[in-house]
Image 1 (cartoon, helix red, strand yellow):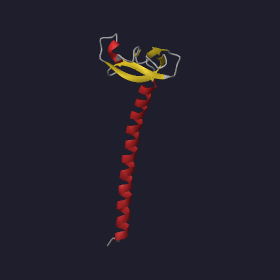
Image 2 (cartoon, helix red, strand yellow; image 1 turned 120 degrees about the horizontal axis):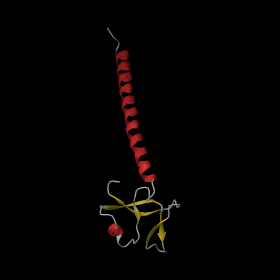
Image 3 (cartoon, helix red, strand yellow; image 1 turned 180 degrees about the vertical axis):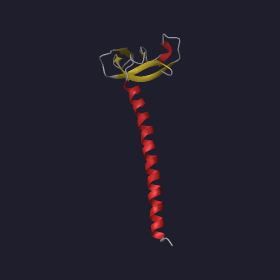
Length: 105
């Protein structure tokens, strides 16, 4: 006849192993997604094939491409004027500004 204490310890060990496996899988999934997020947010407006928002009153309506634009904030777009009336492109700048990019890029 098995002791109740030994059976309980075995159940706890099995549950702990299962939880550890789930934790490792979750870290892997979220870690890979985080690297995709970091890659996407680290790009400049020019690297995303975007255009700096020239006139902040128009939004991305002045987009020259035929694609559907979306407004994002990316490096390489610096404020133009004080207060800013828009943003101009400066590839050497690490300042973040408004950028219009094609949806899904």
